[in-house]
Image: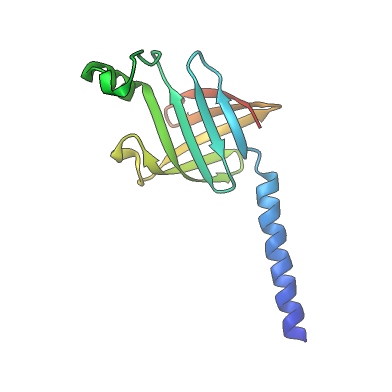
Length: 139
């Protein structure tokens, strides 16, 4: 009986800790990039997905089959795509890509960001570059 009570207490404690980490993680949700170009950052309990158009707008063409090589290169150079796992420690976000537009970004040391949330606004500051990205919570 004592063994069963101990086991039950451990299961309840593990569920509580797990629930608290998900409930207290302020990043969980969908975030729209605040810029002239579209972008969406999504955080689940353990995974993230970042996609955005950076710099110039996407070139216009009728279909992928009819795009020129130059237009395809312009699209490749404009898109930022990165998905994987992440951890949060205090106000620091560490990402580790499982999928990215370019192979060099997959695995490795990942990226580090300092983050600040004020209401529905999220500011990510990449370390050590200092590049800043502002986002607004969608859900």
